[in-house]
Length: 429
Ligand SMILES: NC(=O)c1ccc[n+]([C@@H]2O[C@H](COP(=O)([O-])OP(=O)(O)OC[C@H]3O[C@@H](n4cnc5c(N)ncnc54)[C@H](O)[C@@H]3O)[C@@H](O)[C@H]2O)c1
Image (cartoon, rainbow, N blue to C red):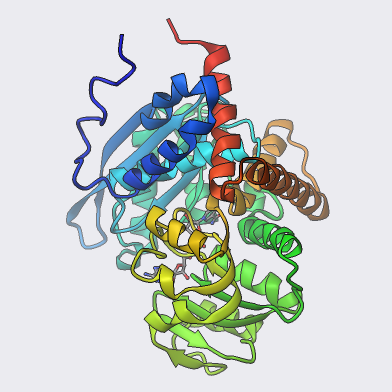
């Protein structure tokens, strides 16, 4: 019998508009030749295990009823329960959540955490709603997806526009429905609810740790190195601060409000305070405003994309003059742009490795919740750094062995682990 699937795509996807899921499929195709006999199982990676679309109705503060589209996708659970964030954004689509869930499977396997991959989202712009409305959205969404999440099934966490408060509401709602406090159902919780020290900064810290490893490989001295950052929220803000504290010069930062530039280096602490106050970098007095498109062409040692996906694309990749790109965001580089950066000799540390710090400390949080025994921040940061460094070393070694990019190497390491688990578990029934 032929190995070709009867339907190459699930019927709920539009083959003309695959969005981020199309990007992910191309990445899987690139890694397949390196999977040896495991390639027999590769179709597993191209089909999310479970896709739940829910209606989230709430009463708005003005008394009217609003409906929002919510998703939870469990891409793969061969290596353990699903794990991945929940995003609130007006442009969230099923294709995007599927891709983000798949990248979580790859990421968790790339750094060897005992998890599968999952992701969730609600299609709304949270800036248009009050805290009380967002609480109602979160609680209803959690109830709707409650049938598939749980501490040993699928563990959500914060992502774009969600935070520790969102996780507290999710944990409370799930616990109320279960009739028992279940701290382990979500991670990224407030410390008072079983959250972990170091979680808030973990993704940005992980980005910084792998950037240090990449700098060593490429003979770049961190002190005085130039850095540009797109997205100055949780991930970009923390990474930018750690570079600044290591003596690097953060010369430009871009967010949804604009781009700010200072060739002598921005005062990152002041910029963080400004963003906390004003909601964005626009209007910061410690630098001059720059055209958004010009940001990409700045000469720099490091470029840290830490906003949304597909920000580095065929239209701007050619302009990039960074030596190293460390992906803080998920999926910030399209496959065409990846090839362009590769041809230019730019060293790209891929998202599935470089932004795995958040899920790594989420894993620590989950372990601490199960044992009800909590570690110090120092212990957490040390363990995080060790996992990130070991993962970087193994993936860089794989890249040298096969003469492939770090992204392909990360996918080889991760997909091999996932498909090995799939194979030894076997198919049920
Ligand atoms: N928070 C985590 O632990 C974590 C973990 C892994 C990956 N990520 C990924 O990192 C990225 C950022 O997440 P975050 O938690 O820092 O989110 P955040 O909401 O804290 O920050 C997002 C940042 O992106 C900026 N932004 C939004 N739209 C933009 C646009 N069109 N142009 C330029 N900038 C824009 C915002 O202004 C903000 O500075 C996302 O891709 C997310 O999936 C986050």
